[in-house]
Image (cartoon, rainbow, N blue to C red; front, side, top):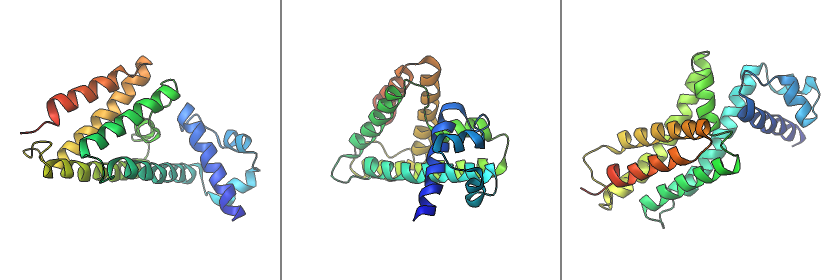
Length: 195
């Protein structure tokens, strides 16, 4: 139990630092200092910084999968309301971090996709998992007649995730949630509409 606690502490500290300053700018020593763990412990759990980065990605993704499940798979809530809750949660996060951190997976995708096939594959896998959560929610909306069925839910899910990640990037750049609000407004007024 203690061993897992130390590993989790390293991952949590690393995720926090990476979300603030990026993967390349986050040194192992900074992670160790932040969580008060000796250097030897780091290499007990991780063979390299890349191995550590992959663990941070998977830990964040697993935690966020739980959040997505709670937001998008609540069958007691109409599907479009589930999506609106998802977006509201994202805007709230951006407000809480003063538009500084955004989405860890999106940030890492921008930073690392051109540097490492291993990271690119891991990040793409995370995005694919997230898209599937949207697909199921959109299928529910189509089955209820809340949105048109002429566009496959897979294409809509990809559009939503791609557009939302872009809106988050713009929100960070502008230090304003306005791009996120604009995306959501257009999505619900012109894309996710009944036939």
